[in-house]
Amino acid sequence: MSDLPSRRLLLVHAHPDDETINNGATMAKYVAEGAHVTLVTCTLGEEGEVIPADLAHLAADREDRLGVHRMGELSAAMAELGVTDHVFLGGPGRYRDSGMMGLEQNDRPDAFWRADVDEAAGHAVAEIRRVRPQVVVAYDPNGGYGHPDHIQAHRVAMRAVELAAEPAFRRDLGDPYQVAKVYWNCLPRSAAEAGLERLRAAGALFEGVAGVDDLPSVVPDSEVTAVIDGRAYAGAKTAAMRAHATQIAVDGPFFALSNDLGQPLLTLEHYRLVRGEPGGPLPETDLFAGIEP
Picture 1: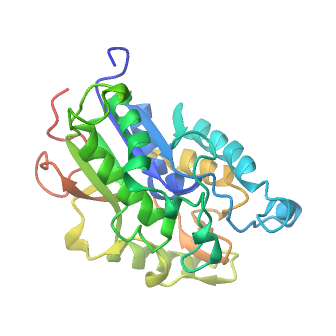
Picture 2: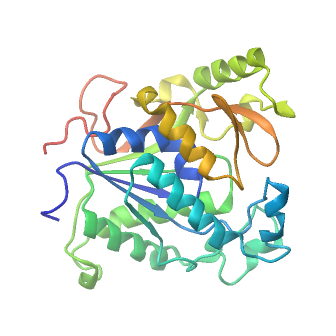
């Protein structure tokens, strides 16, 4: 740990691309400012729908090689953001993408949705004790929009924060460590509405425009406790989004997933503090506010 920077941030995400969509500007900003940023990705995203026609053969119902391809996309995206510490929970392929809620893929023995939470959290504990982050970023209990892997990633991240601090929990994973602050990703309704209005006015080249309720993690403005201004890193976030080419189509400051419904590409990224104390007036503008170096 002595070789790591004094500020350390760890993020837990379900699939490659989730990290860039939710936190790309935040990650780039903190890397540029000298913090150590660690990304833990829980699955390879094997069940994702493929946007480019020339890569459709990779899909799970054809060659089932999308997961390996998305590993490469994630590496390229992290290079754009400057993140050098990115790992897969338990190692690449330990847990498989569970698909959308209610699909038969949820019931595969290796699906992340079916994983024992404490067992999976143990792998996250190893990363927390290795890096000793002051701040952890995760999803809310609904995983932002109800995807089983996002819900499970929330459970695993929150359980890992608890277990990492327990002296009796698997000393082979390192010394006990208490995370100072945990934030959940969120999007204030006002920012969602304004972004969608910009998209409609711009006439971006997508089949349609998402509605506010189509966007993940939308909350009343009053629930937002931190706003990270990543506008200086818009180029890095956009390039990282483009790196996830099987999953994301980018058109200027907008993007779409496989449903081809346009969404705003946001560089003001929002959070809810759910563990620890705020470091000053709300909303905070620094996830490390109030934490002694």
